[in-house]
Length: 133
Image (cartoon, rainbow, N blue to C red; front, side):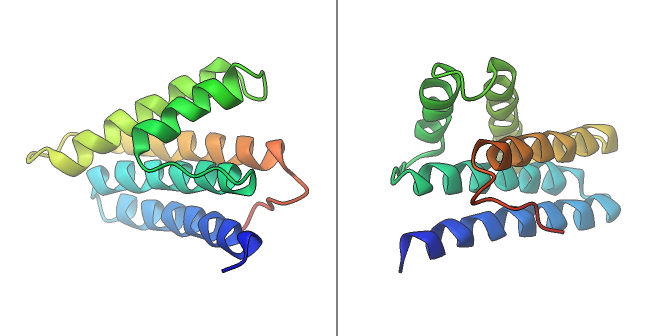
């Protein structure tokens, strides 16, 4: 598969995850909305690094790269790295805890956070990443 096809595939997955987050939010499945929001951010960041021909095996490795390669190089503000890390922690709770953890407000906040990350990826490389509806 060509690099740009793979980058585009992850970018599209990001928007599918955002759509899913909105659907499950309406179904009052707040844990799933939180999880899908994280995956929207994850796929967008993954697409950005893949564009730079960098791949990571774990979620933690990608999180470290956000800090080292986006924040420390001043491509992104530190607040985005903090937001991304919080989303990752919340996704772990949403996916692996047996009891429902999140409220509607928290799920809505997670979706807004995902959009911030997606927009930051788009702003980093607007020549490649287009915001999809």
